[in-house]
Amino acid sequence: MSANCLQLNVAKTEFLLYSSRQRVHRVPVSPVLTSDHSVNPASVVCDLGVWIVRGLSVSTHVTKVVSGCFAVLCQLYSIRRSVSQESLIGLVVCLLLTRLDHCNAVLGMITSRRG
Image (cartoon, rainbow, N blue to C red; front, side):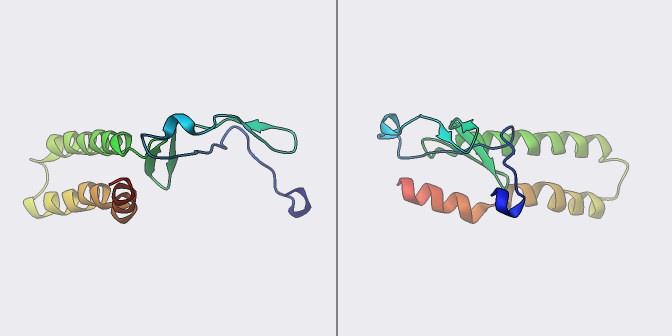
């Protein structure tokens, strides 16, 4: 990496070794050694807005999406009388449905591999 003038940001670097829930205890938890730093494996990582747990559970992702949608709903509730119904529908589509549909295909692949 140093030949291309790239540096590893250890504070932002994380990795995840995952397996099924039945075999998650067999996954090694030893750190990965780079040139002069070691990076410990994480139990939960976020990649492109998808939260993935070491046991391939999507419960953390669902919790994060629900809490984000609830926050948006609370904000929309407070302005519902100040905007027209068409504008409110547009805001719901833009702010809620995009959150719910984000990475839907990725989550479908994760859950189908588990089953």
